[in-house]
Image (cartoon, one colour):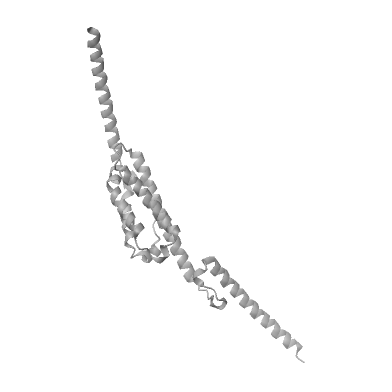
Length: 213
């Protein structure tokens, strides 16, 4: 009889210990999800190019919303995850300016969207860890930085091409199919050829003057 009493007491205390341990773990997890973390800065579109994308409202909306993720707790990230996913989806499906229709830009937007989908999925995981949310937040900010970096690259190339006013009509080329490097090469070659022609004419003129009786 005493054996069963001791067994009962032992089981009771062991059960209480496990419950307390579980409670302590839960108390540890919840504060971590509420701890504010400062994430890396997002690369921004250069100020000189802002006017070029002024009317691209979907991109501006994502940029404004994602600024909330600079200094934020995992709980706050999760509470904004679904709205962020919707905004990025709108960006992906929006009618983009012609300059931003190349596949290389679309790929970066798709990567960003996939990362927001993963974050949205985390909102349905009860046992999600703060470190996992923070890591996914960093991935989203990195993906959006890649989008802005591509915007800068595309607009930089456009501005550079605008500065190189190459007249290619004299050789019957379609200027829309010539990249920046080719245009610069054509211009340099044309200028060099023009100088050579002028130099040749000058030498011919001098020889004629020498041969005059």
